Image 1 (cartoon, one colour):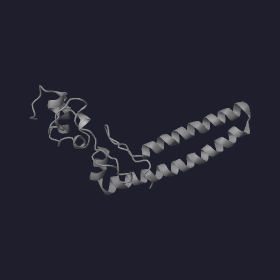
Image 2: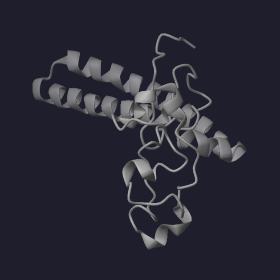
Image 3: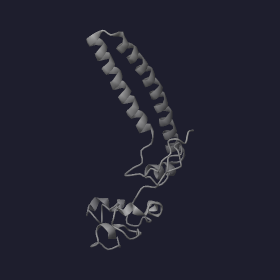
Image 4: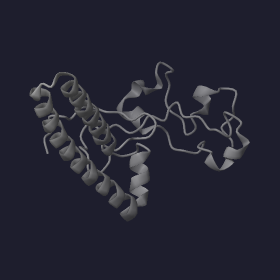
Length: 166
């Protein structure tokens, strides 16, 4: 595995697995092949047809890689569901991706649906007791100018009028 692609990468929202990137690549290659076919139909130029054939071969290779990545993802989900959730939530990198440069998901601006947004049906989804933002220790600017240090409940940063009790 080449380390040329290593860079600091943070997570916003859920952490997508690279199978998503491969799905995008497949869609883009498919669209490009259709466009080459359209150019060939309009012009009759065999260069477009030859290029389309190359794109279809690339598409086949990309789909193969996508299937491998999806199988790895499904295997992780069935063999270690807790790690799957931790990876999806951005707490740790996906095991089949480069580990260097990973920064946990910033949770400094997370809000509780139940307490902060008063969604009564979300009582079982309360996040007020979660530990402080781990990314803050690595990149202290993650509070986006709010300043201070993360608390066990970040509601005080977002809604100072709320108490830290559920």
